[in-house]
Image (cartoon, rainbow, N blue to C red; front, side, top):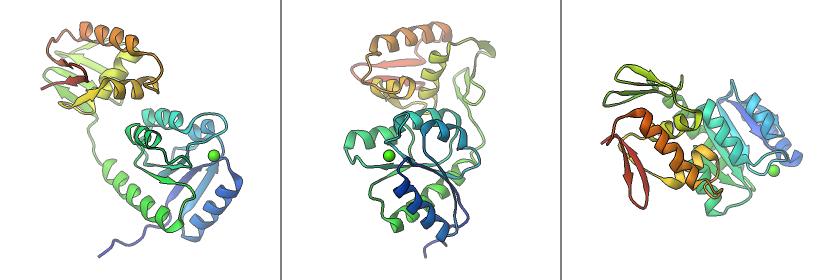
Length: 227
Ligand code: CA
C-alpha cells in the first residue's frame, strides 16, 4: 500500500522565473502545501530555515544554484530537490554529490514533483532523527556541528579549510573519497585549479592530527579516513 500523500509541507521555492514560480506556488497550495517563494540564491540562504524541503532552480540571477546548494549544505540538512533546465549529466551528478536529494528536469510535471517531494521530505524527517554528529576514528573525535576536533582528548586548532576537508572525509569514515569530490565540496568546483591547494591543506591537516595512517592516500584517486 502506498503511504498517504503528505500535506501542509512548508516548501521553499527558489525560482527567478515568475511564470514557473507562480504556477508551482499555485499547484503546491492546491495540494495543501505551504510554499514560500524567493527569486535569488542569496534570499534562499536566508529563507531556508523552518522549511521542510527546498525546491532549487539552478539558473538563478545572482549565483549558480549549485553554489547555493553547497553553501546551504554547510548549515542545513533540509532536503533539497534541484529543478534544472539543463539535463546534462555533469550538472546532475554534481548536484547529487553536493547533497541534493533528488532532481527534476524542467518543465516539471506536477504529479512527479509532488511524488518526489513527498519522498525526500519523508527521508529528511528520518534523517533529522539521527542524533549524533560526532564522528570518532581511533582517538580522534570530530564534532561536525560545532566544528571542533580533539585528538586523544585534546582539542586541536584547524583552519576552516582543514576542518572542511576533514569533515568531508569524516562524513564517510572508512570510505574512499576522490580528490574531485573533496575539491567540489570544499571549494565549490573541482574544475577551479585548486589541486595544489588541496595538497597544502591536507599536509597541514595531517601534521596537526599527528596520527600517521589515519588519513590514507589512495594513489590516483583520493583519500580515506580510518580503516
Ligand atoms: Ca531560472
